[in-house]
Length: 548
Image (tube, rainbow, N blue to C red):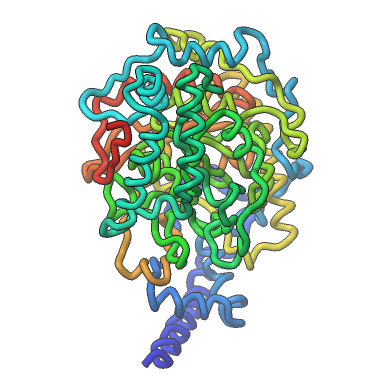
């Protein structure tokens, strides 16, 4: 039966290919050079085409795609149908840029004003803390934890016990949350006890002392396995922390474990059926995906397991899950936060960033984690950290750049990689396009302070039963989720995603703000104002209040 189905698929694909070569190619004609393209056509909005596959159909398609027929016929067909070969048709005069590093003098970093540590102290003061516009339910943020510790209502050790109960309960639920995939009771309690002693002596190390935090499995954390969402890596417990892990330990944070992720960061749903992981569930609706690839980090924050998590963003992998789960996600400027100790999956586009319950917490984490690291050369030449102006009472002097086409129609053409079909020449073309895009952004940011876009072109996709065993391939949904993310990763500019409401189905909707290189302060300033526009926050269907 399986053989019959396989050959049926081959026959159907052959018919489709014949139809394309005999009719579609004849109608559309040969590739045209950039100068020949109709400018109006470049604004044409179309969606990507590829069937949604899962279960047995995904197995068969994967086998076919990796066959000789697939590599020479099927994959080139999908490349052309979805315009993945677009860059091959363009002519470039720009030299390629292989790393989106912008020197401080170009980024105009501002080292004047109050030192970040002083601003951090102000962040926790009632007189400057922004008043949430929402009523009813609200997430516990860093401020809530600190208030509980300072008042003596709770200790970090008591909170750690609550988190351990929540971790155990979340894995017994049906379906299991699968947010934290590795955790160690003794290590959690040891860090919490040390923090409890410091609060008792009134000597906390920082704003993050006693704050529960988790890190994506792509980041090295002792003593956990550095698997990056797969089963073939991390065969031994890690013996060296990543730079950001070390900074969190030095700040007194309580690391509750490492979080789930899409295998090797190769997708945007968070679908990972591997035996060590399982599919992370969206706390807002467990029948939907979290987004990826930092799936577990967003799920842990939205479920209340911790107010802060770290992820990596090589193509929206922090901002997409934050948007899908209704929390805040920050991708800093390329090089701003050290990537040392992370798996180099996409070294020229990736940035580490926090996922948090509010913009204020993202600013705290950013301030403590950002800065040069001798072991990370791409971030050595960065301007001094600045958070000046984030508490300005209004947005005077800020010019917003908005392309309203994004908001009128969310089905813009997006290019995704079918990696086996791309060549070294394609790679050079992509880096020439990076040069062109960075030049365009420098010109754009001479007239505007930031760019606003939707966070994603879709809400969190539904999890199908057939996804649970072998995963799924849903290229159109992946394209919709990364549509507004790629510009930031390609060019290195920072981006912040803030939740602004819900769909008719009750799924979170987010807005993205992007700014020029090294200007994260503008993102926080605007993000703090955006939070006030959300009338209410819905309590996730899976939520643990570890402060009770």
